[in-house]
Image (cartoon, rainbow, N blue to C red; front, top):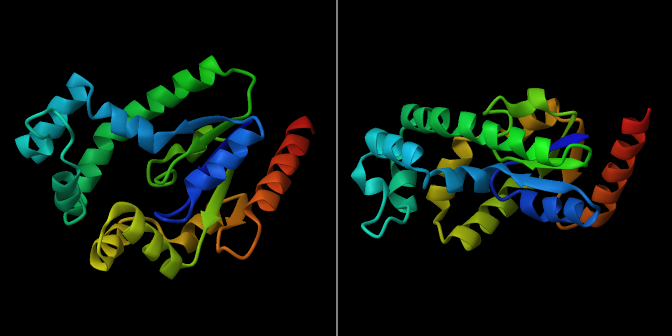
Length: 195
C-alpha cells in the first residue's frame, strides 16, 4: 500500500506524517529528498545555470532566500526548477519503494499533484487547515512576513482542488483530533488493501 500525503504550505503534513510513522508506515519525504538533491554535483550545476551562482553561498550552503526570491516571483523559473528536481525525486522514491517492498509506504509531498506523482500511488490523503491558521504557522516557522507567505500560497494548487483529487481528507484545524483521524484512515486503508 502506497499512500500519498499532501496539503498546502502550513497545513501540518509533517505532523500527520509522524502519526502514520508511529503506526508503522515507512515515510518518504519528497521535500527533504528535493533539498538533498541541490547538493548532488549534476543538479547543483543545473541550478546555478538556471538561477545563477548566487544560488549557493561561498561556503557551499544553499542560498534559500535568493532562490525563493527568484522562483516565487517568476512562475516560469519555478516551473523550470521543478522540472529539474521532480524526475530526480521520482527516482529516489522508486528506489525507496524497492527497498521497502512489502511495507506500508507514505509519500509526503507538498507538490504531489503539481509534480504529477499521483499515478504511482494507491490512495491520496490531503491535510487541510483554515488559510489564516496556515499563514500564521508559516510566518512563525519560516520567519516570513504575510506577503511572502501569500506569494507561496499563490504558487500552490488550492486546497479545494486538492480535496477533489484526494481519497481521504484530514482536517488539521486544532479542533478535530488528528490522532483519531489518522488511526481511522490507517485502519480503513489496511482493510481496503486486504479486500
